[in-house]
Amino acid sequence: MRYFIFSDVHANLEAFDAVLSAVAEEQADRMIFLGDVVGYGAQPNEAIDRLKQLKPDATVRGNHDKVIAGVEDGSSFQELAYTSAMWSRRQIRTDNRDYLQRMAQGPVTLERGIQISHGSPHDEDFYIVSHWDARPILHESESWIVFYGHTHLPMIYSTESKLSQYYPEDDEVYYNLSADKQYLINPGSVGQPRDLNPKASFAILDTDESIICIKRVEYDIQATQRKIRQAGLPTWHADRLAAGR
Image 1 (cartoon, one colour):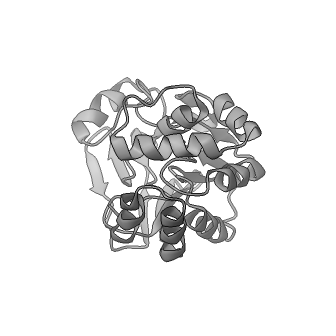
Image 2: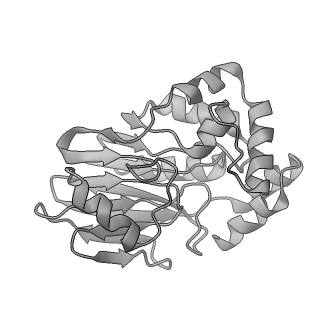
Image 3: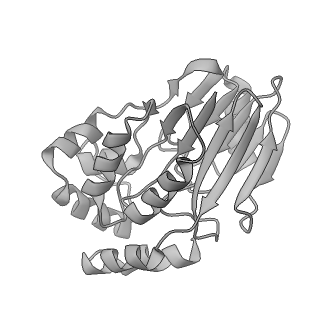
């Protein structure tokens, strides 16, 4: 079974479409989305529409999805993120707001020992940024793999140690997975990478071969930046895309 796992699109349609074009060659059997289809970017309706058309096999909500849908008020957001979220809340159509409101709260357990969440399975808004954060999740989990997003940083942790922080200069990084270990894996961000590599990030899991690959693809960053600025959104959301931070 081959899984396409992606997260944190953040209304970046150019990056989303570039990833989908690359995935078309992967012959994935299942599609898993880890949350935050909206926020920061200037095309929230278009990004939601694209996600709806894809009909992922499993989806969990992200913190921006919740705030933009009106499920939460955004009081925990930093100023620029809040400004973007409120703009997006005003832009999205009613049917798309309803779609965001219906997104599942993580964690969600899937077949073959796979669990998904946006942040930690213990708290969907918690940022997993170190092995100290990952260790209790790994030791308490009954799943082979827990996929998460939220940090925008591709990462693989195992029950023994952190396997590796993703190498930003590589467009494809493969890892062999063991049946007798447990893993906590972040596929990185489609629409707003933060590991100093501006290319869109996603993952392909092959459970028959026990291999996961984190992949990067180029997209038209300048087009995305131009749309953010034209929409009157904070320019930092545009500027950071070129640096991948």
